[in-house]
Length: 422
Image (cartoon, rainbow, N blue to C red; front, side):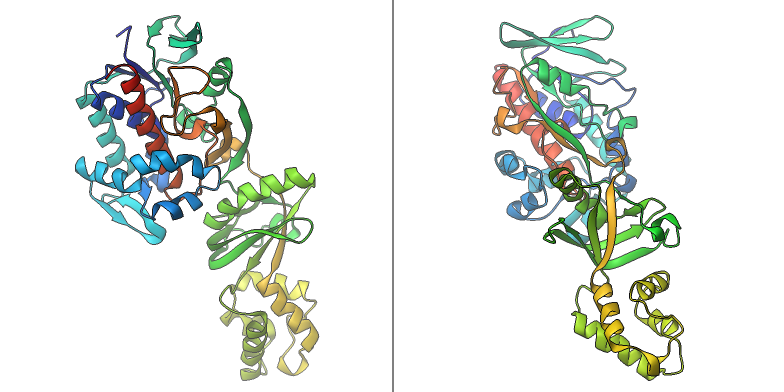
């Protein structure tokens, strides 16, 4: 097919959904991808289980997409999480809801989802060309006219959908190719940055690796600006690593760390852990003191094992200037109060994050002010559409980014087909 009604570049979640939505309208659709197989990023999402969407209500869903989530209102109203669930169930994929509204296939295998999407694309008559890297998108007289492959071959179409992702997880094919094509059409690319990415720290207890592998459950993590104002707080699970901290709540805090480092031009930012988010400082003080009182001959480092993860105790005691071998009778009350304060706000200086290539999601992208939110069409170049992670839209992990990808993909595909006269 040298000429198509709609050309979709990129066979990830947004591209596959765009191809399905466009061909559903009766358009002749050509899907081109530079890799040897489609849906690679989808195949590793949700830890290889593919978290297809999140079941929260629309307004709450948008709150979990802190990077320009409101831009998605129109797309999500047409094809949102409820429609995504119905779509997959219509393909015969049974879904189940897990914690925090995350929706997974009952099979627990991403392959189930990827295969179903690709089969649907094929069954709707979409022509697929893999191993076909695009060199450029072609424009003529202020209009989209097709794409040129790296082989020099030209494919004609007056509707081209760019669905090539951002710059994160490049081994799946998202290496930022689409930004240059967008700029050639006159678009601005807002600054790219890593988001949903582990945080890096030079703290002595990180460098010594004494906490490496320690997993914390049901704690809270806060990000503070240099003026002492709390920027964000997230509850859940986290993990100490050899380079810093990771796990769901660290990833969710990462974009706030990146923005604060830039905004304040500082070398590091404080994040803090609250080990007992459901208790006050006074409750921590009284409860731990009582534990020591009940076992007065036992050293405080052993008493506290019943209250806190064992690996963290020596560090907390050292920061509070308490001898780990102290027993109840010798506890200095002022320092014990300091210890309780540290349990509620244990500071970690972080200096940044892992690279954008190691991030789960790319922040920044094609400026959404230049895109029509109802159609995903460029306001600057008729016939050019964008969907998925190339847009300056990013959410937390937990099914939010993939929801945005499916929703914008469906919107772009449907409207590209309608613009082509279908």
